[in-house]
Amino acid sequence: MILIIANKELKTLFASPLAWTLLALMQLVLAWIFLGRLDAFLEIQSQLIQIANPPGVTEVIAAPVFAMAAVVLMMATPLLTMKLIAEERHNNTMTFLLSAPVSITDIVLGKFLGLMIFFSTVIGLVLALSISLLAGSSLDFGLLLSNTTGVFLIAACFASLGLFISCLTAQPAIAAAGALGALLLLWAVDIAANEINSFLGFFSLLKHFENFNRGIIDSSDLVYFILFTLTFLVLSIRKLDGERLRG
Amino acid sequence: MLTISACNLSRNFGTYTAVRGVNLELNNGEVLGFLGPNGAGKSTTMRMLTGNLAPSSGSVKICGVDLLDDPLGAKKHIGYLPETPPLYRELTVNEYLLLAAKLHRINNNKLLSALEAVKLQCGLIDVGKNLIGSLSKGYQQRVGIAQAIIHSPKAVILDEPTVGLDPNQMREILFLIRELGTSHSVVLSTHILTVVESICDRVQIMHQGQMVFTDTIISLKQKKINLEEIFSQLTLKRTPEKKT
Image (cartoon, rainbow over all chains, first blue to last red; front, side, top):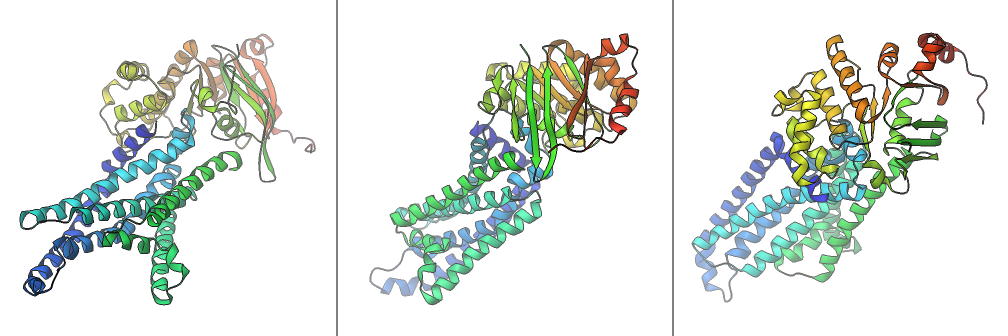
């Protein structure tokens, strides 16, 4: 059931120009950054050789591109999550899913999975960009792996938060604005945490991503991302269930 | 066995009571006309019968399965067309109906035969590859009915399926519903009383959240009672003080 709903999400997503436009724009931005970093690397390459244990291409080029990918995904999330529940309500298609013998858990997980598959294609393209460096250099696959894992997990957090906000309203525009606001707030927390170096840093998504970006897979970061995702998935299920009872 | 039996259904929205103590029974192979002025609580009742809305009190059994205890088991037996057909405009008719079939757990090897059968029944053979968004209102309504019956449910619940159709389309849809009545039990809500007289076996009238009238069409005809008179008599009069 979950797979059927995920499949339906992808089908409706790719039937609209939105998905293709987003994919193209994200790829354009990330490729631009990639080329910029590549250019910078070539310029400083001669100086790098003189340092003992110099940073490699993965650190100088791939890691910043992955960091940027996290921000780009954050911006794209509201546009995609607004479709998940709010737009279904707006178009009166939610009854189609609710009348079928499908549980609300299946609906929520199916929609989440569908969005994650879409995000995976974006992440896959970023990975492909990095792997293209193999043509002229060797790569640090460990660092690449931790970055990919990190981006995937942070994307899961974005998706679950957006999905929950989408459950709160029947207006796609409000769902998008709400998700954008919440994500920006989490980003602002990151900036505040940088300045005062307080406990706030623990709540920042990007802060937890930084370790992955540096090649460290810390179990506390893993747990944070997984708990964050699970929390909002459970909240979404509870919200939709509650609506049937009270709405 | 009764296809649908709803007992003492009530539903509050905050302090407002939309449906109050409604009993509804649908016998096997029966077409039930469900009447009432706008705002009487028909749609709310239908949403409760299909598991879209949980009743504040009361119980619903579909083919003997309790909708609240075993929602997935009960929903298998229902096909529901809400007031606004729940259509994905960006999908083709085939894609959409296949999705409906899969969500209703039709086996993979029977999917295509179910699709062909329902398209034949609803006259959708020629438009299978068209996008739903590009179809006319009448065809969209047929797609809506098709998604409700593709899994051949025991009970089909149609909420105002004839709204906004031209007379020809209406005749076709009614013909389709009458055909449905031979193999399924149907609950049909509508405002057109002649429709009820021509295709329903029994009629129930709802007013201000309560069921105020129920009788079979045959006995109405025998008693020479005009449905329109009954309807205006029951729904125009001011109801006495609300019970608390």
